[in-house]
Each structure stands twice: as structure tokens, then as C-alpha cells.
Image (cartoon, rainbow, N blue to C red; front, side, top):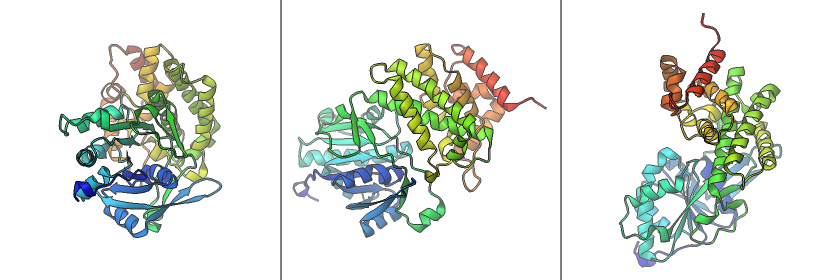
Length: 408
């Protein structure tokens, strides 16, 4: 399409990723806010069905049982590169929700779209909402894009990289649900997208559900060290208490586990407050924890212990929810014993999916733990140093022996 025929549509969102968060959250918010939503996805059956129908359903899993009908949507297959590039060039705003593994593959398309847009209108900036659970996401996007774009492209002037904190919970859907309707998606009622107010090059979109924040790093850390940490803690403590628990609400119906999970989240909240005393109060963080625990117990959501706990190499990684909170506690000289207990419990997590299969990387993790032991996990997965963190290793080994029981 010739550049002079491309027009920028202010009320068009181009969204990479027609998956769970893309459809249930980002696309839903912008569609209901009056935008056309153009999904870019690598799964052609989803793209074809979006184009055939022009709408889809978000089933809200709560006692009310609400169903949202999301309209004014269409799809483009990622393999149609020039079409994708033209859509980016004419977008009012762009968003990305493809998961960390999918990000490298979309960077050439993003770069191509930005350059095409520059041809159309050299003064029109484009904001990119990064709807990924990824620390330092803006830095990652800038580095990835500038590496493949011309050096004279005015990136800082024309591209807004808007980090987010994704708090919406979307459960794994069963095979029967997907077979019933390939486009329907389940989600909880929570519908607030926290995002970086300062990163926009254009005015902030005036859409219900968007919550722009000044200190975005603090809110990203709140999600990681309270929400994500609480989720993982519930899964790991719950699995050890009863490997037959399937749903998170079953775990948290056990009031002993509920108490321990809450206390672990409270310990992490005190760590977070130590880092950001001007952004949060203990009262607000406590209210947030109690609200989260209520949401975690949403029976209608049907969130599974498997989904919440699996992918151990990522969830126990140095900067992730548990190891990261411990590092921050060390930096601030604050207690982290409950968080460490949850981390060691995670090393014993062996929950399977509905077919009885471990998450692929978790099978490898289990072999590493069985062959090399807890010290290897702490050092090579969690990134702790045996010399500098001697006390942590000693305490973790004690917890590990306690969990494993006596050797017969």
C-alpha cells in the first residue's frame, strides 16, 4: 500500500497477541472504550474466526456469571508481514501481549511498522503498551528495537514504551471449553490495568479501567512481590499439604494454609514498604493482600494449583517473585524467613495438568533437584552465592530436610 494512502486512525488499537490476556483484558478494555481492536496472532484458526465473526465472548467467572460481548474486532496472521506493518503504521495505539518467549519474533514486525509510520507521518509518535509480566520491559523493548532500526530513527521522540502491571487472573481453559467455542475466554471480574503514566508520548487514553501511575516500578514490584508471590506460596504450600488439591480455592479453604500464605504475603509487604515508603502504606498493602486472597478463593474462576505453581525455573529465578523478594529483604536488612520457606517448598512442587503431565521444564527441574540437591537449586536457579549468602543456604537446607522427612 503506498505511504500516501495510509492514514492514522486515532481510535484503533493494534494488539499483538490474541491469547488469554490479549482477549480477556487489553482487547476487552479498548473495545469497550470505543476502539477498533486489530489482533495480530500466529495462530491462524483464532485469526480466521475473529474475522469471520467480528466479535467474541469474555465469560466472567464469579457468582454473577456475567458475559461480555466484545465487538469491533478483527485479526491478522503474523505471517502476513506487510499487512501487519501497514496496520502498525496506521494505529492510534499499540499493545503487546505475546509472552516473553514470543517477543523476539515480533520485533522485526514492530520495527517495520514504526519505520513505515515514519514515512507516513514523521512527527506522529506511537505508544506501545507492554502487557507482559516482564521486569524492565521498556528497556528490553528499546534495546531489541534499536538494534534492528536505522541509527538516525528518532526513537525517543516517536516511541512511548508503556510498562504495565497485569493483575487480572485468567485460568487455564479445559479442552471441552475450547472445543465449545475457540474464541471464548474466561476471566475474573477484576478489570484494572495499572500502567506507566509518564511513558506516554500521546495523551493518556481516556478509557475506563486504565489506572496510570507516576512511580511505575513500585507498582510492578507490588504485583511481583505480593500478587505473584502470594500465588506461588499458596500453590507450593498447598501441594505439600495435599498433592490431590486441584484448585486454588481448595488450598485456601484450609485455614492453616490460608494463615501461612497471608503471613508470607505480609512479610513481603513489609519488604516492599521498606523499598517504597512514599508510595505505599501498610494499611493499603494489607487491604490489597486481603482482597487478593479473596480473589484467589474465587471458586467460579476455577484457577488450578498447577497453573499457579508450574514453571519453576522461571518462578524461582533470581529476579522473580520469591528470590527477588529475598534479595530485596537482604538489601534492606529485613526478615525473609517465610518467603524462604515458600521458595524451598517450591523445590518440591510436582503438580501435573489435567492429563497428569508435568510442565515440561518442571520435569527437568525435578531431575536437577533430585540429582544435585537444594544447594544447586539455590545457586544455579535462584542465583544466590554460597559464600555471601551462607546463612540462607544453611536455613534452606534445614527447611529442605524438614520437608523431605527422615532418610529411611
